[in-house]
Length: 371
Image (cartoon, rainbow, N blue to C red; front, side, top):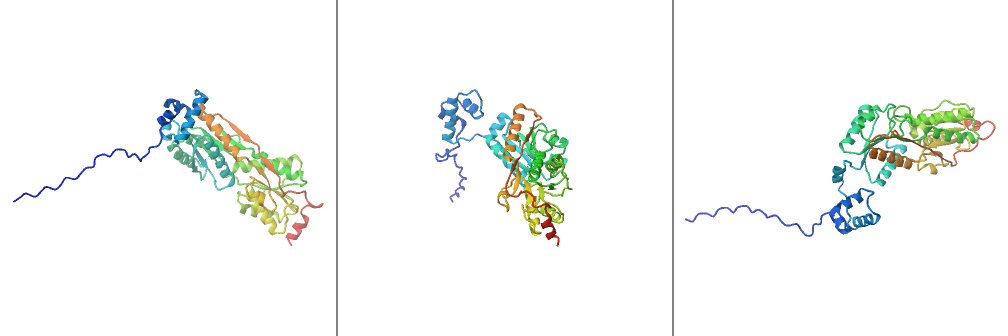
């Protein structure tokens, strides 16, 4: 009886050759071949080395463009010890100011060919700072930019960042960490002086929050308001507290309509000015005929309010550019520079400010509103 045939052995596919239709990404050697130079020369061009002639640089860049070559960032980081990535800690990113500063930093980083990794910062508590900064350090960022009012000593922040380049935006003006900010005292002075020069006897102020959520910006604007009134011998009314939100401006406006003689209001940001505007109108007060109003930030909606809002603009794009310059200086030098860059604000005059009416400013609308 014939023996049964053994089961066939499983077949093993031989390795297939590289498929001709699969195209690998261009490498640095391909760029070198097309440009007719060595790969070391290509590397020098891509790293902006000064020892390359303009003609050679142009040949290499043309080859890069022709091939669509993209540098291997992981390999570059291993070779140079730099990731070309900026870590950003951002607090209150939903507010116009911090969000605009973040946008300015991102634009400046792109221009400098840096990537940006953003981590939210719910508070400036030392433990939170350390935890959030650790997240950035694990990603190998080259520097840390903080968009938040950090503690005055900044010890926790410096400890969290270790030896990395570190820059704080809108932090304490006289702090111990490199920083870029707008002159917040000048912001308050510009707004108040504009109202005083229009003829108003004094100016009421709706402040930003105190404490770690807005301390330096709020305090600086309030200080500028006080200085401007004191300089002309005007009465300094008690400030009305706000928290940057339209609701807090509305609440402050509800108090203002119960006070006789109010003809001018400086709100510490445009969102609160919007709340003040609504509260005044609900009680029959006309802006600017009865009360003039100035805000801060020049939000996109400010020009389209009724009336268009006079405000103090902060150049957030410039804040981003300057912060990138400070970061790059630290990276190149390997040391913190103790740099403090303070930028000037700009008054944007629209139609929410006019001279007070009559010999008794505010009398007609206040008396009508409390009946």
